[in-house]
Length: 270
Image (cartoon, rainbow, N blue to C red; front, side):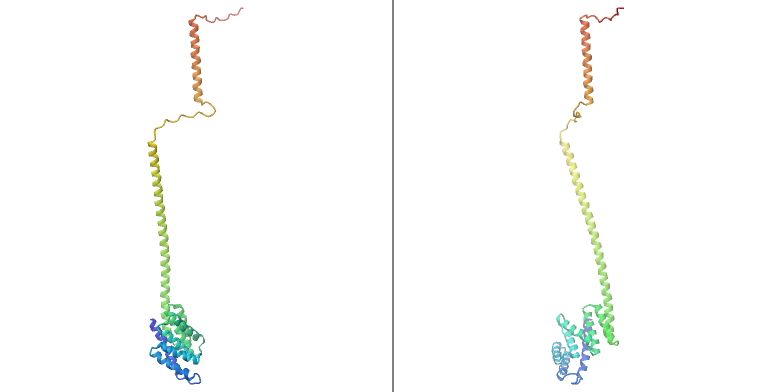
C-alpha cells in the first residue's frame, strides 16, 4: 500500500510539470524552463537524485517557481533515502505550497502528498485531515477520496487495537494485583504456620524441661508479715490450755498423795 500511494503522488507531480514545458518567457526564463524539462526526463528514467539537482538549478533561476518546488519535493520523496532530513525537507516544501501556492492544482496535490506522507507514518488522523483539504480544492480527486476512506478504516482499526491494549493492560494489572494478594496471603499463612510451629516447639521444650526437673515439695503457706496466722494462734492457745490442765492434775495428785486436808467449808459464827 505504501508504494501505491507514493506512486500516485509522483504521477501527479509529473502531470503538473508538463504544464511548465509550454510556458513562455513571460512567466519563466529559458534556463529555468530547460532545467525543469531536464529534471522531468531524469525523473522518468528513475534517476531521482539527478532530477533533484536539475530542479534545484531551476529554483536558483527562480526561487518562487511553484512547479520546480513541487517536483523537487517529489524527487526527494521518490529517492530510497526519503527518510529523516530528506523527507523533512520534502514535507516542508509541500506544507508551504499547500498554504501559499497560487496554483490551485499545486495546492491540492501538495495536501494530497502530505496526506500520503502521514499515511505511510501511520498517522491516520492527520492523513484524513490532509486528504479532506485536497478534496476541498478539487472534489473530483478520486485518488484522494479513495485514500481518505482507506485512512478512515485504518484509523478505526488502530483505535480498536489501542482499546484492546488498554483492556489487556487493565486485565493484566488486575491479575497482577490478585496474584500479589494471593502471594501475600500465602506468605502470611506460611509465616503464621512457622510462628505456630515455633510456639509448639517452645512449649514442647518447656514441657520437657519441666519433666527433667527434680520434684519439689509443695510450698507451705507463708506466715503473714507482722503477726501470727490464725491457725498458729489457735494451736498455741490449745497447747497452753493442755499444759494448764496437766499442771492442775499434777497439783491435785500431789495433794492427795501427801494427805493434805481438804479445804473445809467456812461456817458463819452466827
